[in-house]
Image (cartoon, rainbow, N blue to C red):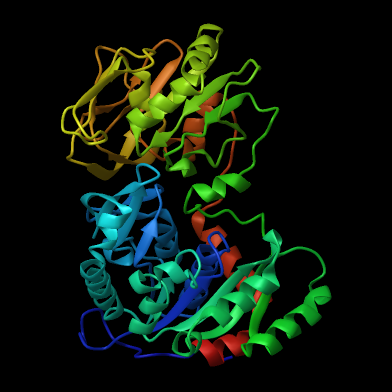
Length: 482
């Protein structure tokens, strides 16, 4: 089939008033596969020769990544940018909500900290934030032929419709053609697709041009009558029934994905699943056991991951009995590693004089496994770095933290090109601010003695595009979306 070109030959910035064609990928629920499908479409269009970029107006995730030009965005949009062979930038995810509690989040606007808000206070700024999201989209749209827009949660959250800035209101603003994604593996796919579309008013329902059934297991032909039933019921054609593809690994967007993460009961590496865990993509190369309470088992390693609420999650560790258990495991021979917030927890104390995490200034004791002290601060560090371990292993990493940790004369975890050092190494205890260190096979081998391999991201994206083309009705995709 010949490649279709839209506004071909246009260079970035040539025509300020020309907008890209937009494809909107929405879901019947959270974790239905929207990020996965949007990334697949991004890669497919890039392979077709189009200039394509990803966009998500508002993301809620503690998995983020710093952009080279400054600021941070959600990891899902970073992966989508990589699929488009682009450097990530804040306009791809102008609003990022990083939950700090059950009631509130730190709000990142255009890559920078905008403030900490409870849900009600955040919604009071809806008009302002929607306009900021639209401006970000307009800037992005003027530079590309296609923009693939990802929604959030369900497109039919009726109690949030008046405050929607990420789903169908964004699709309408961008004049996008919508694809509805449902997860058959979780069950209820008929009710989720039919119910979602039947809840929409006519003008929003008209935006949805097709639906996709995701994560199908088994013989695809056995669902032919199910596909026909849904098409007849909703009057919208099925783009395809997409198979489960466990062999393809992409960055997960949020903590919901941990519910499906492999946890190996016989593994001798345990990672504590903190309530406000962040950047758990650090551990995708490890066969590990995720724990939320002490276990009666001798371990080789215990890892404390990053968190968006260090003091709150340290309090949780103590309530769960995990704080004493970790120290006991360490005394019994286990090694302990802390990353970012987990590194802060390993020290002697954490001070919060600027009320970064607490409503009033607070200090608390750490676990005391490293002779370091942390002072939280409102100034946020977000940067990518090149690093080298004391043993000479070079790796790429990134920092996202609010606060500084002062160590004594301990050996650092890593050396940085500017002569600075990161983290600390004590007696069978390691602490670092460097997210991504354990995504380096060399670092994993050096620390854990485990030989691992990691496929290049480009290979994963190519596999994802093949997965998309293998299941999608490509003629329908051309007709409805391009």
